[in-house]
Structure formats: structure tokens, C-alpha cells
Amino acid sequence: MSQIVEVGPAHAAVLAAMHGLVFPHEPWNEAAFATLLQQPGALALIQGQDGFLLLRAVLDEAEILTLGVLEKRRGIGGALLHEGLCRLRAGAVRVVHLEVAASNAPARALYEKQGFMQSGLRKAYYHDGGDALMLCLKLDPPGGPS
Ligand SMILES: CC(C)(COP(=O)(O)OP(=O)(O)OC[C@H]1O[C@@H](n2cnc3c(N)ncnc32)[C@H](O)[C@@H]1OP(=O)(O)O)[C@@H](O)C(=O)NCCC(=O)NCCS
Image (tube, rainbow, N blue to C red):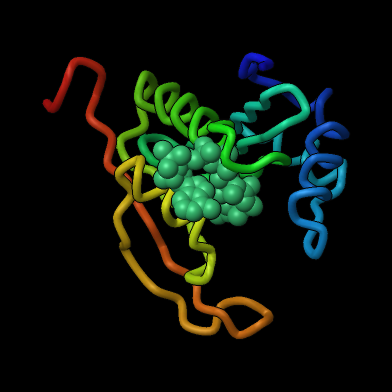
């Protein structure tokens, strides 16, 4: 299995290709990834061409922008998320936010397993009328709670 590596704007096309396969109804193109990856605090991790995670940190908060894997239930999504959270924890980030469709049981289970808690609800947030859940995770500083 490939290692998880951090990538930058030079990998925008690779990220867009994977994103289009995971999210065929809402693909992000290469230019969108290139723009996101040039922003301060952006962090993109990939595992070969099997999965991707994109985060953005601002001061002590971060947001998970997108996460996906091409072959599910092989531990790739969990490994990407764990690695991303470790990197955020090692930096200055103390809280991580994300939104997930209420109907997305696999993603909700993944985030719950990593300790995310619901922090809000956006009713009828998506085009299909589905609700979005706001989740957040507090990160202890390296070495434990202060
Ligand atoms: C959500 C997603 C990234 C999970 O990736 P994955 O590689 O399949 O997940 P993993 O194999 O690492 O699973 C880690 C944990 O997540 C949970 N999980 C993942 N898929 C699950 C499923 N279908 N049903 C129940 N729990 C699931 C389990 O707790 C699992 O731990 P376990 O294997 O010990 O039971 C993947 O399903 C995906 O790409 N979905 C489409 C894109 C998407 O929805 N992204 C998130 C948008 S917010």
C-alpha cells in the first residue's frame, strides 16, 4: 500500500482526477485545487491514487474541506484523517470543523470514530434537500491537555 504524502499545487490535477471519481456529481477541477492549495494553511494529503484529504488551517482552527477514497473499507480514509489530525495537533490547531450530509452514514461513522461531535445542523442544506451536520473535534496540544 502507498504511503501517505503531503502534496502541493503541482498535484492539483491528480487531486481533481480522484475527486471527480469520488464525487462525480460535484467534481472540483484542477484550477479549484490549485487555488485552494496556494492558500495559507492549506494541507493536502494523498495515499497514492487511492485517496485524498484536503484541510485548511487558520490560526488555531482548521476545516476539513474534502476527503475521499476510491476503494472503500480498506482503512485509507481513516489513515488519511488520522494523519491529517496528527499534523494539525502538532501545529497550533486546537479545533477542527467539518460538515457532512446527515445521510452519509460511512463518513459519519468515520468521523465519530475519530472523536468528532455534532456542533450544529443545517436543515435542507444540500440541493437534494438533505440536511448537513456540523461536526467538530477539539485537539489537545502535543503532550496532553494544558
Ligand atoms: C467516508 C470515506 C472517506 C471512508 O473511507 P474508508 O477508507 O472507506 O474508511 P476506512 O476503511 O478507513 O474506515 C474507517 C472507519 O470508518 C467507519 N466506516 C467507514 N465506512 C463505513 C461504512 N460503510 N459503514 C460503517 N462504518 C464505516 C468505520 O468506523 C471504520 O472503522 P472500522 O473499519 O474499524 O469499522 C469513504 O466512504 C468515501 O470516500 N466516501 C465518499 C466520499 C465522502 O463521503 N467523503 C466524506 C465527505 S464529508
